[in-house]
Length: 567
Image (cartoon, rainbow, N blue to C red; front, side, top):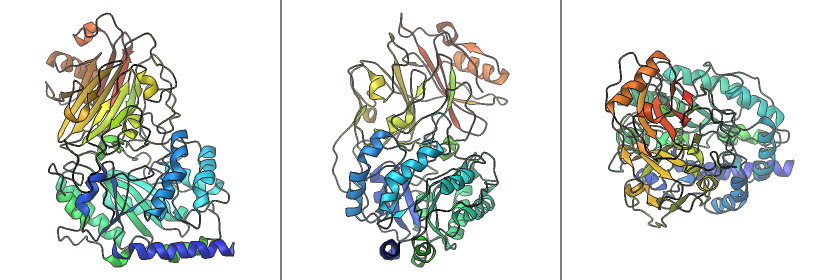
């Protein structure tokens, strides 16, 4: 154990030296080229994309931090080789699972059982103890049994596990704001038991203005920079959007300049508060010890974890975790999943079974799984070291195949290129990682809600359709426009409506849907209701994206003739 202690201490000291020139701030991104505008910022020192290795073009001034998003088979298979590659490139830290405590269907979270989480950590993360600094699973700020309660139980069960720092996610509304963030960090300190803390996702939910966000970020960053045990934090997220970090010209917008410390704001971090400055002091004493159970405290909120659309720009992207994830991501609430299937999702591989009933799925942050498997999405091999990829960046916000959310899988297959192709050849369900065809003997559709530039679009893609390219809008995409104004008393805001392979924007239909939502009444998914007869002689699926009263992006799905209602 003494030898392990010495090795860990050496690694910690070396990592601290690496960050001596940088601040605590990191970038949570899905498009590697969008790390480039931060070159020259002394306040950004690290980045991650919920995957295991970066692709180019990437800002190599930043330490890339690999993450094992879940225990999915494809992620496990590539883990060791990718970590070795990133170690050689200078990575000193590892992140464990993404929101294993959150099991909302389509949430872009890894949704892992406790025993599976412990076993995966011991097998895939623990071998790097003493060689790299190891982060805990990244939990939401949901109330028990999720959030800090889940993390405390994990640390108590993970016998022999080296955990060098805690990874947390935090989202709340502008009213709770900084006071709630401070309160949550104080509760987390009880679980940390002296370990440093990384806030690997944070942001505001609900309606807020850019000025309100700037005020919150300025105060939050000033406070976090002053806390020795908060080693790193990353705002959600580094993407194009008014309230994200990048403008439509692919340069830093006002939020990005504030975050990078390039606006002269007082929130700029001094290099003396580098990301690992407290690690050597707080973690070396733990190098010989295993994770210990901490008190099972929960967050002050019962359900403020990651509403998907709360991670979105108010003007350019409709969702996020995911994070929006939500890009590849898509993000998300702890939230209500009405009539939805049991969730056992494991990132890119395991997909829950969906019944023939209609279901409401909470979509996630520009979702967060980023597996490199090249199945559905074929990328161009752009290798420019500095140029923004040709064409406007594509951000998949939500994807549904028949009635099943495949956002995480679709996002995981998109890797930072300029060309996104949905490949023809049938058996699309296999390419999407589903264990079986959810609707045999039908021509099924994949419906994708995405942003390209500052426009939201919907593309419908049928089994055996010709190859198409989201980057150039050859997938039959339709720019999302609302044909009617949302009624004042409506509990939802409609975003997009698809019936079969057709995006519907008729005022009559949207008014009918608003009426159903306002009255809470059910309706049947039929040609008559939708006022359209696409795909004659074939079974059709309804896919209705909408926002609830908390501005979370959700999707209501139904097979033809199913009865459904908004929840």
